[in-house]
Image 1 (cartoon, rainbow, N blue to C red):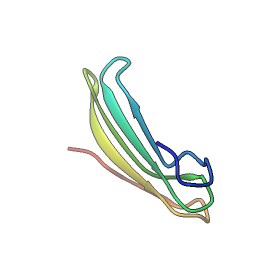
Image 2 (spheres, one colour):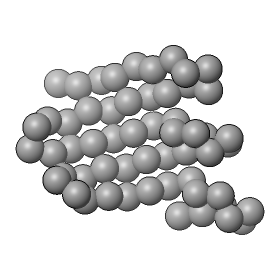
Image 3 (cartoon, rainbow, N blue to C red):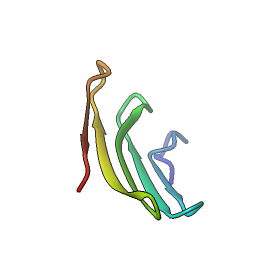
Length: 56
């Protein structure tokens, strides 16, 4: 999905599981959610590169 300026904001994927990517205002990944046979996780990424991963 794109915003009115044509920038990608949301991506969905289903290769080897499912995934959702939400981009921030500078088109960098902001939130990544993944679920697959190897497990599931949520990654939050700040503009400065800091990351936090939440996994069971």
